[in-house]
Amino acid sequence: MVRLRVEKVQEQIQHEISNMLLRDVKDPRIQFVTVTGVELTDDMSQAKVFVSLYGPEDKQKEAWDALNRAKGYLRTEIARRIRLRFAPELVLEKDTSLEYGARIDSLLRQIKENEGK
Image (cartoon, rainbow, N blue to C red; front, side, top):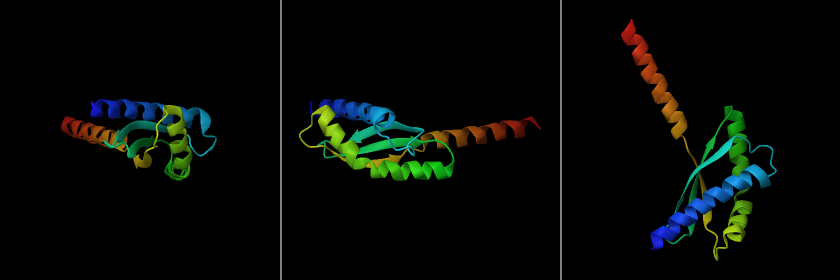
């Protein structure tokens, strides 16, 4: 029963953070950022927020710094919008699964090209 509540809150947090990044956060450095997932501890005291950053490396670094500066705002808004008594501490994690997948794909293409020769 507890885990079901945690999963629902995870989904709500992911949805709300995505909406805030699209509509409410006015920092121009935060562009091309996607929230790919949220992992919430069972006691709901900490939430790992997985984000994918797109664009050139320097823009990704700027976006990462801006996201870390906006954590307090995001936490406050999550508590208000989801109506939680205690807002979970947000821990941002870079989701590199898309980059990893692209790397695997390029390696497979190279193997296929080399076999054809």
